[in-house]
Image 1: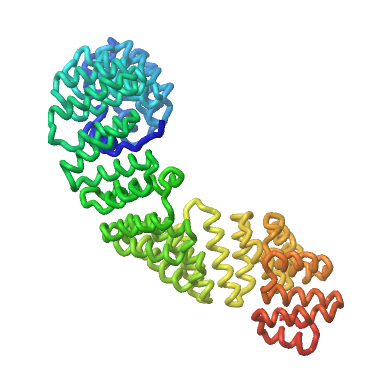
Image 2: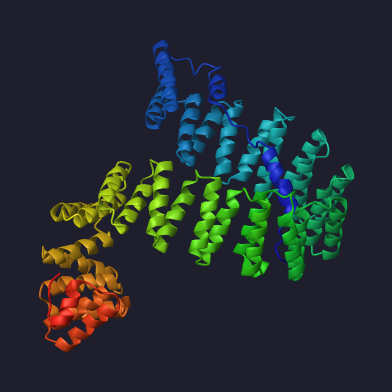
Amino acid sequence: MKKIINWFSIIVLFIAVVSCSGTKKITEQEVVGAALEKPVEELAEQKQKEFEFLFVEALKQKMFGNAQKAIQLLSSCLEIDPNSSAAMYELANIHASNNDFTSASLLLEKAISLNAENKWYKLSLAQIYQQTNKFSEAADIYTELLKNDSENMELLYSKAILLANAQRFDEAIATYDSMEKKSGINEQISVAKQQLLVSAGRVEDAFGEIEKLIDSNPEEAKYYGLLADLYQSQGDNEKALENYNKILDMDPNNGFVHFSLANYYISIDELEKSYDHTKKGFSSESVDIQNKLQLYMMLTSNRDKSKLTNEKEEELIQLLIKNHPDEFLVYTVYAESLIKKQKLSEARTALLKALSIEQNDYVLWERVLFIDNDLRDWEGLYKHSKETAELFPNQPQGYFMNAVACIQLEKYDETILITEEGLDYVIDNPQLKASFLMLKGEAVYKNKNKQDAFKLFDEAVKLDPENYITLNNYAYYLSLEGGDLDKAERMSGKVIERFPDNGTYLDTHAWVLFKKGEYTLAKFYMESAIKNGGEENATLLEHYGDILFMLEKLDEAKEFWEKAKSNGGNSEVLLRKIREQKYFEE
């Protein structure tokens, strides 16, 4: 049987979950008050005072967040009085907060055996059982608690949920029946019972439960939606459609029914009717934006079932924009759709529209910066990263991306300033710190302060030895300066070992070898660089010509210098090489 999205059921259950508070949160004051109603035991007066002092101090340390100190103090309490249920309870709470549920449950079980009347101990143990998926054991605790508080609806509701999770369906249904006797017919209870009855295989009783709900309020349209969903789940499409149409007769503006009908028509392969109702739901003012976006995500994430084409997806997005022009989430979702289609410029426009509505979403700003970088729009990156750093001054990423833009725009002095400012916000992140130092080193090198730049590169490599951009650039600058060429070869060798098909990195390694006079080996790596994306790269072509000249292949050298010129190379040194057919250093 196909799984069906039951919109009415989902909405009613959502309301039910929101309206019920679940298990009551136990306050420390209630527990301590209940626990200390009795003396811990007839101890010697001195020991009694010591116990009380340690216990109160433990609670204080716990309140201050000093969990380990509190554990030590409570353990000392138990050394004085091994049967102190209050100390066990407090110690169990700390273990539970540290996700040590085994220790917590053992302590609470012991505390309950010593003080069986304390309901707070039992509630805490039930919560731990629930967290560890021991639903049946948790439900049994609520059964015990109800013996002394049989009218407590909150306890009954929690018990029913736990019994359902434990798949003790008949007992869960009986618990809901007990609740219904006390409260009367209730939508929340009826919906929960209906689902349990289906799970228990009592389908006719499930229909009876919804019919009973309709009889209690025949003017409520959503109850017919629940009935329609149930019919559809049981394969009775005719009665399902009958009830969906009844909702439209009763409430023509009900947008949710269109989503149910869309799902209905999908199930019987009438795709155009399904899409038509989807559009009506998206256009409905009675459906909030969250539900529309939820459905949109479901449709786009499961295209095999929804049969949603790119054109239909675009149409739905435009409907959302038309009907919710001031909702920033709509533009965010639209941007993600465009990014998946590699429409980066349009995606950035959508993100910027979202930010014009909600400018304090840092994640969106970060997305914009990454798109700027991917588009190599350095002016855009410069502008947007400045805005990001101003809005989120404690986030180092804004400063870093601004430094990237500054380097590309040859704003070297500004790069140095922004990296120094951004470094103040880098905490416990050596990789990011290394990247900042690398950018600062780049700017310092471009400002002709080469020795200081090399010190910065050394520090960056020490912090992050796997930063291949730093290793590559540092090696290349060393080769240009004729510095420590062995060091440069080690660094560039490490880079091409990791990226053997990267033309830029291969060029660096070849040029280091060229500077060392190893021309034959340099030729091998430069040929690989050209084959891996360097066929139209003027720098790589010129370098290859230089290598060929050193290998006394003069005609071939001139050929590649000419190729470098035709691909945009226009430096005076290159033109001189061509004129005089001779190698000259930069």
